Length: 425
Image 1 (cartoon, rainbow, N blue to C red):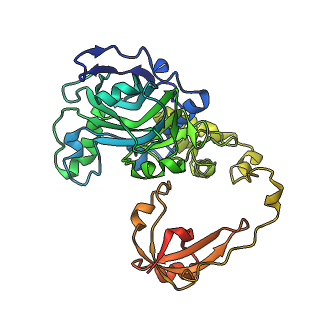
Image 2 (image 1 turned 90 degrees about the horizontal axis):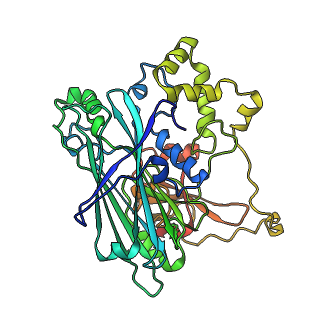
Image 3 (image 1 turned 180 degrees about the vertical axis):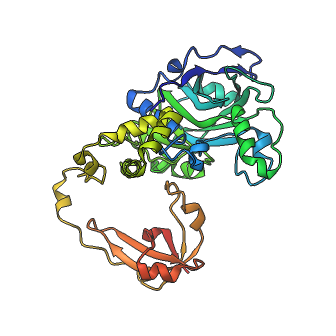
């Protein structure tokens, strides 16, 4: 979903690894031409969701600082401390099943802001996989705003890309990509000026940055559900501020999106949604309810302040009651296997996994739940052993170090794991 008054541009790329300079990709559409219409819609949605999710009131902090995730700040700002919580780099790793002659296309997309003007930029790199094995690629990304000033220099970044053969007899490669903001600039001043310093630093920032990739011939492998032969390699992939998801179909696909938010493989925009959100209509319903609380004056101010806010307001302004009901939820019937009509009897739980048992939490590697990193290795107590209609066992636990564990047990709010993710203590 693109605000109508924003411009698209391409970014110049210099190839320092080979000593030469390659011309900019001629236009944003060419840089992303390998994306299908559905993949492009998902890429656009992720790009702009982090910009403005709701048309908040004009005085709301989130209306004054749109950029919430996927922001690579200049190193002077990101490393200046003052509790900024900002970063200047992002890293992603993913697996590719193909031969050394496969052609890999990697495109970088981001938004830019300068003196109130905003737009998006994209550039694509195309290379043969064998060339990346011989020598890692280093490319410089540059973007000059329409009216640069001495206080806000051009944004400069670099993409570091390399490939490694996977060990073992099955073949395959690990692709590693690091994007860094290397813009020059003075560090921000006193902590009480952090908000103003951030606004100034955004002129040299890569905003909402994402990576999209395509391979031919060959396929990318799912990190969440890899084939058995690639499971260890998938678990070893490191991702920081960019998380890869397959586009097109689960398991294997020739197209991949590494986004600053965690997405499942084969994500889809809900057909019921009047706007482009990656959330199965939950945000749409909240958007409709929030919009209903705005006065006419607040809606008018929101429309005047930002074209994205105007688009969001227009999307829900004339929703019929039946459309609002659709946003409340939906039921999916997966498959038509007659065997699913008869629930399997629940399996007896392990004798060691019973209510009150002391366990260690060991989340299964490759899951896309971001909370797993915080509970891995934690001591926990089993609160209940539950079974669903498909005969699967789910273990409800509370964390021993959680000061609110008693309340969680009282209200039935637990963390849930499969039996193979818990280790008896």
